[in-house]
Image 1 (cartoon, rainbow, N blue to C red):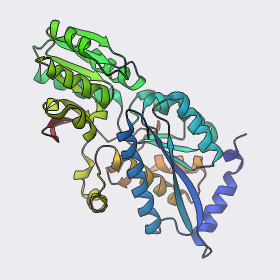
Image 2 (image 1 turned 120 degrees about the vertical axis):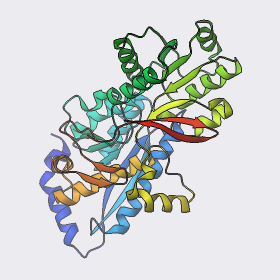
Image 3 (image 1 turned 90 degrees about the vertical axis):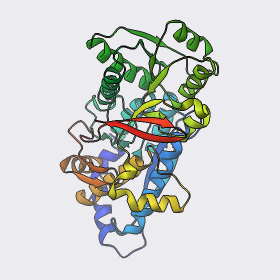
Image 4 (image 1 turned 60 degrees about the horizontal axis):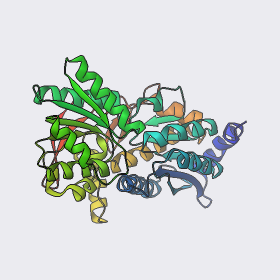
Length: 370
């Protein structure tokens, strides 16, 4: 039997006492897990900074009186085996919440460990539908799903590039292939002829891939993958004078993409959730982060919102027990820095939506929203 299932009554009693006690604060351990090293470390930094800012605000707010939330940081490097090892370690550490993971190939296997251990997992960025399609009761996501994101991308291509020769590529990862398959399927349903290809992540030279697309007369390529490799493809396509527009998925929402491409990145399109920095609820948080010389870009505020949602549910449940907290998460809308979060029975956020963005001179511009 899980130690968390066995101690459900104890966790309720612990929190109830903490909420009314004048004794020294009782520590509650939570974690943020994601790629803190490796080729997607810039996104891991967004998760870490968002979660850390939220914990600081939570401890200062008195929302959970008599307690102090302690945040640990776990690195999965977007590697499935490392993610499972991280999940097992966090289980042994008796954390109550995991904000993460990011990469679908890490988040999905780790979620099985968390569900068995009765630990709440709220992902700010795992978009593969399978995360919440397996009936796990403690697994949630703040972000949207690829079967939403991919349709938005495909519809944009159909509307703005109706007579172009199209390729759809992926990096063979769970996330990259998953989103690319959605885009490819929707384009085919619309009667488009699409060249479908894949490439190996972690390479430095994609000139052969670029040359093949140039030879085939590809005018727009949708790429499912991560910012490092997509940035290299964009830069090498420009070097080859390929007349090619590239559109990709949510991991391009980081300045590190522009650092790789430079001006070659101009015109690159991608999808991401609505820009949370524009939300009135986020204004104070964005200002505080800016004052601390931190950016609120990308997934940062979505990680912040994950902590907010959990804390709100713990407060309403009057318990740290995962079953009760999960029920509270699903029971009513929760106001967060990314807007109103409504978790459905699967653990999906019913209202994030996706927008289309464009890189232009190191700035991200919104060009369409659904």
